[in-house]
Length: 103
Image 1 (cartoon, rainbow, N blue to C red):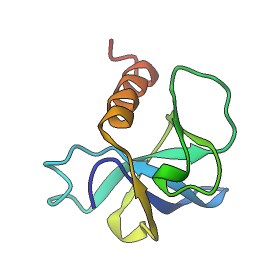
Image 2: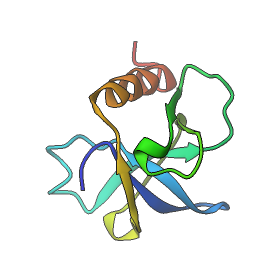
Image 3: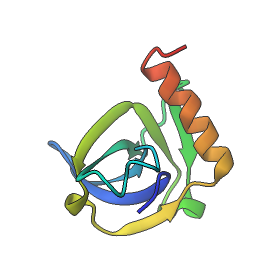
């Protein structure tokens, strides 16, 4: 389990959905919970979205939407679908900065 991994997770009111782990790598082994970004097929063209697809284990073109964050127990992570590469992780970092108004 690593930052950038895509897993199916239970999402409130939506059932199981893919999500990307965004918890910092050094914390994951020590924490019972991880923070994830929801992946959706609803693309809006927002600066808080990161394009994902088959290369990340998804059945169709999707986006990780950094406006939708959830912290949940690691035991809730279901099937591992794929992993983001360094370029996508960098883009996701930028999306999180925008979503959380950190810049």
